[in-house]
Length: 215
Length: 251
Image (cartoon, rainbow over all chains, first blue to last red; front, side, top):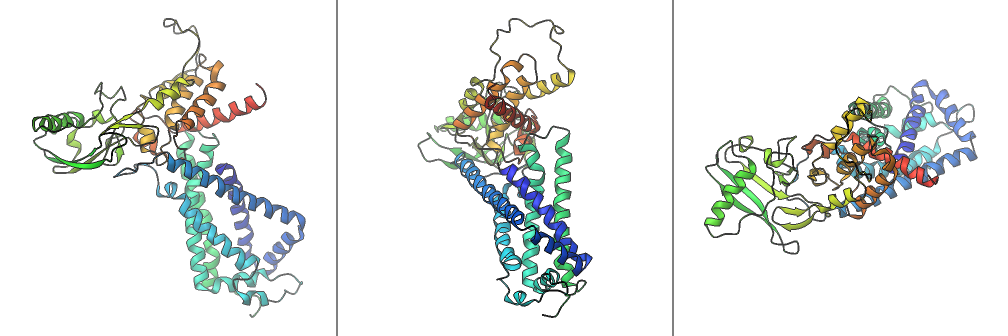
């Protein structure tokens, strides 16, 4: 179940990145993309509910799994060395928790627009659409916000270096010849996701992307 | 060579255990790890002390009886290989070496470095066999087996059942062991008729015994003395999914 729900969330991570990267295509493009998402109406709420269920299930099954696994070794080793198990694979709970904290903040920041009251004062653009473009630019101009964002994306990347190949194994879609390829492409994929997401605050902070309206 | 040993001493499962220090001096570099423990025990007995309890049998790496966690790694630092195939030349002069038992809840503690691994036997008793009388070895070509399957089955059958996979796993999971036993029979025509019940029963006993769950860290395959590949775990997951579906559909 952790693998299946993780796979759904992985799909969201890709889709959301593709949506966000449209900031580089200019305000008109990303504002109309956001408008299209809003136009989905009930369907949008269905997708949101589906994602929420997946997040909750992903965490619920992870907690159950972890409790089970801790119980399986009541007496810890005095000394334990790992030969192959990566840091990422052993600390999925830690990277997961930080990413969860980030998601909550991120929703408060950009979706509910309560974390930064200035963003709520942004005017609609010329075509009466939400100026998502300027909201993102002003949001990321805050260095602390951007720093937390980069940190969260780094941990998401760690989470995915394990997760993006691990689900193949859990679902039985793996064999001996595929294992090294899956591990490599899982890592490449995780880094691509990281680079993609981090490029946005970086471009804003370097002044490559300017807001479409004054604040 | 001279070493400082830190060995886990514990009288019974109920008693409190601790690491005790022992010197291991004048040891030939070509002494095996178990022979070195024998030497230490000889000196302990001469001094009127209780010798360190540890298990061994064949001492040639094929029986899976020795079960030591050495410096935090199941079977010690030389992979792949059982602890009996580890030689003292592998360590540095004067090195401190920590020796502990295999730790997992289903491995019931007996004494010092000895644990009871019959939980693994009970997993095999749940279905790791073929019910039909097999008789004497048949003519090699009477039942054709694709070369690829024969090779994979042999690879899985190499498991010596030592339990290092569960001992090394951060979750104390015995999935590598179970996957090897399930796979080697599932890959052969003799094991095929019972494959559905076999995988369901073996996994169910594995869980009842209290082993943890696989989170794909692959620590197991790194310490396995028989080099069983973790890809057999993917095969086990596949077998389990198909078997569950088959049962649900009333097969």
